[in-house]
Length: 111
Image 1 (tube, helix red, strand yellow):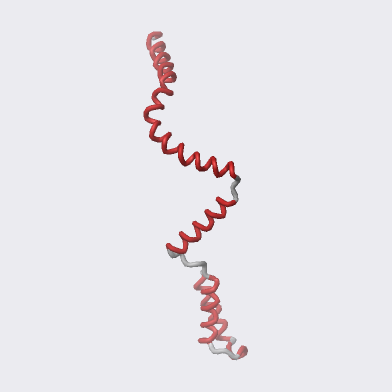
Image 2 (cartoon, rainbow, N blue to C red; image 1 turned 60 degrees about the horizontal axis):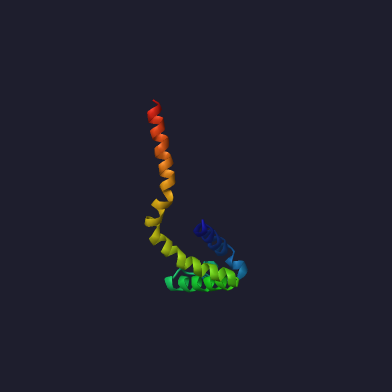
């Protein structure tokens, strides 16, 4: 679509170039320069990383002292909890498993 519009602009420019006083080549150059200026920034990996670091600094700078403390505490607790989960979850889940077993056994005896 963009290429088509660009072609239409060049075609119109070539038709009306005698009125404006510019040749089609000059109009093509100006249209190309204008399209290049409107193009979004390049996505070079280094530029994106710098931009993300800058945005993260702005977001981090907008947090209160309590929010920063809780983020730090969360960063410490999360890996510890993931290491302890296989040990702690069976202990926490045992009462529920006993209730399910009791319900299944009582339903099997009732038949």
